Amino acid sequence: MGCYYYIAELLISACLPMSNIERFNYLLRGYVSGTISIEEHEELFGLLSTHEYDHLLDQAVQNDLKNGITSQNADLPPHIAQEIIRNIISAEKNTAEMLPAKKELFSIWQWMAAASIILIVVTAYIFSPWNNTASKHAFASIIPANIITYKNNSDSEQMVALSDSSQIFLKPKSAIHYPAKFITKNREVYLEGEAFFKVAKNPQKPFLVFYNKIVTKVLGTSFTINTNAQTGNVEVSVKTGRVQVYENDKIIQFASSDKGVILAPNQKAIYKEEQRLFQTTLVEIPQLIGDRRHPHEDSLNVPVQNFNYEQEKLGNVLHELEEAYGIEIVVESTDLYNSVFSGDVSDPDLFTKLKIICLATNSSFEINGTKILIRGKEHN
Image (cartoon, rainbow, N blue to C red; front, side, top):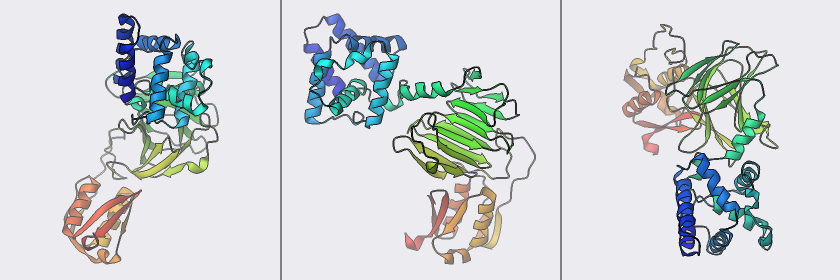
């Protein structure tokens, strides 16, 4: 934000027609707020490509390089700045000339910083509608031709049925690309946005979901893929079965399968793009493995497991919870297993169950990766 206001002050003091100053300020403000239209976006970069504002931008760049970039979002990793530059060159007419040849005295890293400042005046650029456009272009380039594209333009979730009887529950504003029939050795689909998948089992033909820079591989299961609105990280949450999640080597150079993870029910993988790391944890609301009341599962009348205990050892209670949710529960001290619990914890929410149990047994719990750790309060 600081860079934007600095540029705005320079523009006001420059010997340029007032109409141009006002228009440029208007476009910059729209870019900052994320409300700029496609036409205005092209107009803004068109103005930059005229070089009419080169000296103003140079002053802003030199000032920030001298005093340090104050905007917390301006200091982007070099690979993101490189993607932005590649996108400008390929997607914006003549904007490659934004970096004039006469400025050869600047070092490579300085021009990278300059490009970042020009574009990163958006406070929340990472999450704006123009976020990571180069990645979007790269993803679009790997989608095969002559396949079906379905986009959910409604305000409610839509179900898409595939030829193998798999079902995709597509969230609003999301799109799925899939073949009319799966004739190759793999069943491959390409997702943009968010969806819940219920995949028909076929061990001989793995099901692959391509989602930007990651791939989710399954044989037959149900899971969700989405991007976290707060962090921008891609998340894969498993409902049933097991899935393997790894980097997409069609987009990421030198992608390593060693960085992938295997997820079980009630587990989630978070892909941190900058670090190219997968973090595994538990889903926000773990589901009973045998409970078929999930909105996308078949509506079978399966009885809910009873969790009503009378003078039961904590070790037995925790073992039943492990079996019911498929989540490993460990204790800091095995002495806790001998604690006695009495009570009804039939509430479907696992964490509510644990709060009640811990309150009654003078203990506490915490999530540690894909496990739950029970601690005696005397150790806190």
